[in-house]
Amino acid sequence: MSFALETESLVKTYGAVRALDGLSLRIPAGGVFGVLGPNGAGKSTLFRIALGLVRPTSGTARLFGAPAGQASSLRRAGAMIETPRYPPYLTARDVLKMLAMESGAVGSADIDYWLERVGLGGAADRKAGTFSVGMKQRLGLAAAFFTRPELVILDEPTSGMDPAGIQEIRALIRDLADKEGVTIILASHQLDEVRRVCDRVAIFSKGKLAAEGDVEALTGGKPRLRLTVSPADKALAVLGAKGQPDGPNAVLADVLRAETPALIRALVEAGVEITEARWREADLESAYLGALEPKDLVDAR
Amino acid sequence: MLADAIAAERFRLSRDRTALFWGFGFAPLVAMLFSMAIDLFTRAVLHRTIPGETTDLANRAMGAVAGASGPFTALFLLIGAAAIFAGDYRWETWRLLTPRNSRVNLLVAKLIVFAEVAAWSLLLTAVTAALAGLFSSLVNHARLVAPPGGSVVMGHFAGVFVITWLEVMLVGALAGLVGVVTRSTMGAVIAGLVVVFVQSTLAATMQATTWKSLAIPAYAGRILKAFVAAPDEMRPEAGPAGLGLLLLLAWLVVLAGGAVALFRRQDLTKE
Image (cartoon, rainbow over all chains, first blue to last red; front, side, top):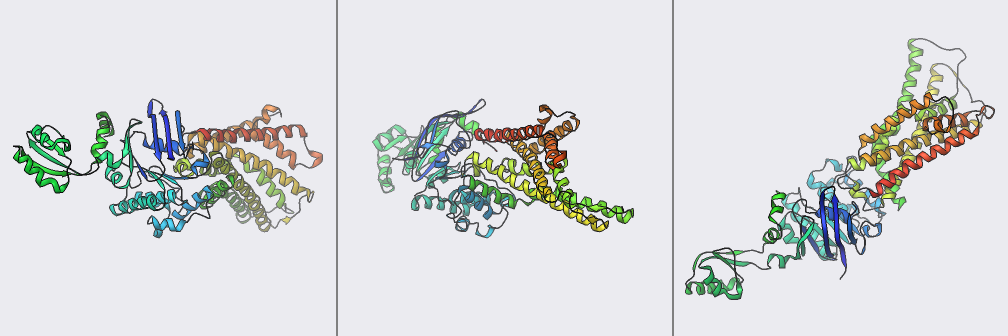
């Protein structure tokens, strides 16, 4: 398996602050990889190291097998780090033209196509400095994608966008990964966005990797039936391997929706009182909160 | 590639009309307008004419270029240089650029584009000075005369132009270094202006030509310009001028090299 981004014992300190604390991570090429974590967990620092914007204190980071920050590997990557800003005297088209010149890709970069694709066709000749946050994000996405890189790093790509815009950009990200084979690394605080768009997820906590895996595996995969019951141990006995406790008076049942009536009947016949039954959808939030230490949650507030 | 970075930087500056006007066009234009206003004032208000007065356009152009490295012009050049060298910190745009080209190329491209636009600015200074001279000759009915020495003057003009351009490049490289260190356009302008003012004052107080006085760029520039602009028989010794040229070049290498070396290793967290 080839990796788009690999880090080994990566450390970055800013004075007394340890932004990355021995991070070892391998992000495979292909698909959409989500990076989650509270503010200050080290997500943006990882991206900045990968793009050569900051130098690691120790450890290694490799982009497509080459040391991060090297021009040869950076030419295969596009990125949007935090809300992008632009010189106020450049139009949206000028921004992309300048970046195409900088990359030596003036001929191959289809500027008008990408401005249309991110919904800025009508604003191509407006000064980018006058754009709303959402429009700046859209231009940042065009800038990340328009040289057709193999890897795109996106840090909070939909922040500041309206709901329709968010949906549009999510579809664009998925489309590029599925149809054009672009590897996308996406950091977001919107867990629902990560659940919908990403194939794999890493959760950072205090500059370390707290959890990593397929979204389905982390979220428990399919929906489960949560029953508030009394007594819980009798209900667990009926459920057997399909049950697990979820608090003092509740159990989670790993069953299909069609099996629900039979299960409830069996529980009632066994003398279990059921006061509530509801389906719990696959839940990244629980996985996210479970991976973080309580102090992270306080710090992130 | 460096050529890509230069093309991008040139394109960007062509769109930054504020920096182009204030940094590289304002000083020559205002000097021309000021000269014209003085001529009009002396003629229309004071009704004063000097019988037999002549105007030497080449000499006026050479004088204007020679004076273009002074503190007044440096202020405006520093505004332009700060926009070029520190603009990416101000607009937080390094993060868009550094993944697309090497840091050395990005900064060297800025130096090269500054060198180009500084040369154009000096040329504009010469042209506007000549235009002001032409206006003066019309208003004062002064006869236009060719400079003594004929075609040799072109060589003198070229020499003065190159020396002044070198001094202006020092101002640009200084703005580049201060811009990288302070990450601020204002820092580049203010610190640069202080240095230019101090060294101009020091140069004015220097009596003897020693290696110490030649190490002050404004003094070295003055000696060099006197050397290249003077007729052959009046030229001072070539020794101090050569040393002055070497020291000017050394300053340029130190300032530009320092800016590139610092920028290469600089963390761009929040530009």
